[in-house]
Amino acid sequence: MIKIGIVGGTGYTGVELLRILATHPHAELTAITSRKEDGVPVAQMYPSLRGRVNLAFSSPDKANLNECDVVFFATPHGVAMAQAPELLANGVKVIDLAADFRLQDVAQFEKWYGMSHTCTEHLPEAVYGLPELNREQIKSARLIGNPGCYPTTMQLGFAPLLKAGVIDASNLIADCKSGVSGAGRKAEIGILFSETSDSFKAYGVSGHRHTPETIEQLQRLTSDKVGLLFTPHLVPMIRGMHSTLYAQLKDSALSMSNEALQALFENAYKDEAFVDVMPFGSHPETRSTRASNILRLALHRPGNGKTVVILVVQDNLVKGASGQAVQCMNLMFGLDETTGLNHVPINP
Image (cartoon, rainbow, N blue to C red; front, side, top):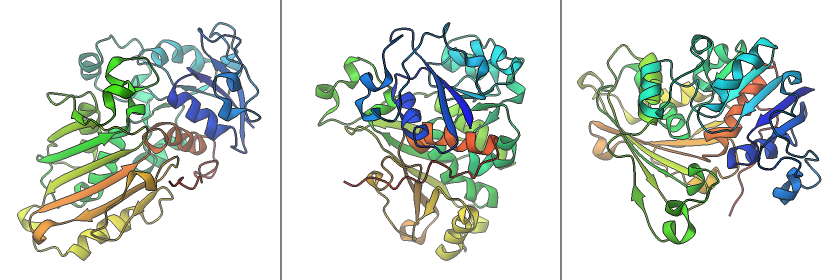
């Protein structure tokens, strides 16, 4: 059994980790930390876990995290990099669901997250935890920077086209929408029910912290300079993410048939358990991935012209966060990648 600790178990990604790991056949939950909720049974805060998780929250100073095999950080940015060195020194693997180990460019991290990076000595060994693109590196990693939710959709949507060299890498556009749970579990006016219901808005238009993360990873797929215009939106639903991606075919690729474009994606993801390439011209819906680790995508080419449109949907809390983190854990411990993650999406 894999002894697991979770730092910050009271938020949405934390409880999603608990939901997934509670039925994982090789997971043994040993510590779940929260200073504020110290001593409170997990099932008291989250009745959905009654009979599944019998632990109580404990303050970080009481939790024996150094005795775990792996520790997940479902915490605000800055927490993991403060605690990771001690854990790594004690042979504990670390998976951070925040941004501390996503960006290799320290200057970019400090610019976008407004804090100094205090763990630069371990940053070079951190592996970006997107299994479909970094599987082999994840297998041997001891420190994972789990991808952001938006970047997961953008990377898996653009990757086959960039790898094939058929699109203009400098002119990528991503028009993305997320449910309110992406903002976390907190009392904030902008995400109150009466503020978000029956409304729709863009945010971070002049710049969003997921842009440098996505560009850094997309740049690994092509020798051409990557340029990305990314606009996120908040939609009045609890969970779910829909990204509409736009790319311009190079002149040398304009003669490609739609069947050939579709084949790029089908070949790229034919062995991927959690990426569903739908028939050309399909319209994937967020509800088709709800509560699952599945990402669905579909290609369009309006008027058979120069623009390729990729529609991508996922559950922002599962494939966009906690499910992906468990997917990485499975790889790190030599398990079948799908272990504990074969949940069928719920509908309605």
